[in-house]
Length: 480
Image 1 (cartoon, rainbow, N blue to C red):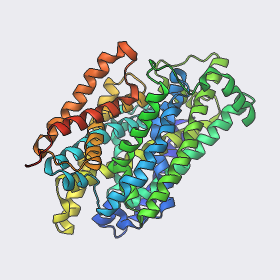
Image 2 (image 1 turned 60 degrees about the vertical axis):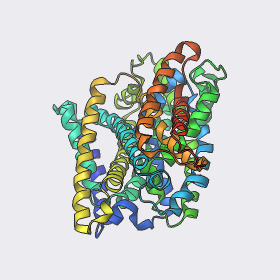
Image 3 (image 1 turned 180 degrees about the vertical axis):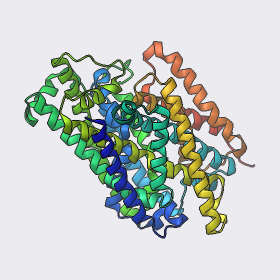
Image 4 (image 1 turned 45 degrees about the vertical axis):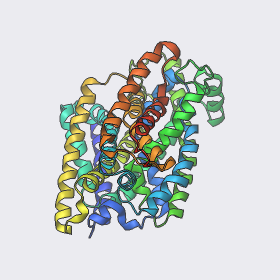
């Protein structure tokens, strides 16, 4: 694919996003930015959330990881079913009943000031790292396809990418994101379907042939029953339950979209439909990964040391034709930006509401603060992406889930303690508890590697349980 074609696709794509941004942000105020005035249709939210949840990690890293972990990642996706059920029936009614803008406001009502600030701070840390990692994938592709051939350095590509996100989100916020994510999800799904068809054509296979070929290959191994394996079914399924709860239900980014629905009933309907679609799409991404490896082996193509590079290598290298390169470029941009743009809005919302108490100011002052915070998080994204570029040496899907196990664990412990007990705690000690639990988890994970392969994705559960126990240790004693 030529640089001119890739550049033209990028220009048209962001031109569409800017047009949507202009239309949706006309007359928008800070209420539109944070909540879209709670008027979003549930089906629009559900469809747009697919793109936000999938991200560039799923688009590139899940197919790439098939070479090492086969289809075992699907065990995590199956576990999401109980997680999303918990979100729909327990967490979302709570958020709607309290009429929250930031979901971490619950922690203030339940425990107090320090719990509230700590919960929000851990979200800011978790989402900044995770979303920067997702955007890093897209920036890498843009660098390879467009900017490197014309001599643009990586650092400038990062700056351009973040600036484009800022341009179409800084006015309308979540009101704009609901619509842009819908467009980006459409591009992502079209890219996935077309790529699978084109790969099949290169191998002279129809849909039935591809299914049979994948089933006969070692890559289709889905369920791991060896308890010493890091991807033992019990570990991955339970991890999937709690990953869904914390990375969706306790995450301001995903919940902010749900809270723009007109009612709790519509928000729950959105969550149920969202899961069933996600179940099918993740299976397709795993199937695509198996097909890419089968194709590479049949054509004696060397597998990259970093498996994240396999899909870009084959798609952009002309192996499947120009259409595959175009759809891949659209897909990775859509997947990564759908996740990153909403994250930037959610981070801005959380910081403005949770730390700056923006609601106490007049609209003009609120708007000015919101703009400054939005720029601040854009700069932070730039820095974190640079760090990933320098230091990361593993598949990003593993890196992100590994980090999430440490950063989201305290949120899991805080919300679980709040929901399942009526006990008060010594609020001033909560920050120390939430810092201690990931450290203890890291030590236990390191020591357990030799015994049973470590906790894998299930370290999130361990971290949450440790935080829960530590919170119990600082409970307020009942007065006699």
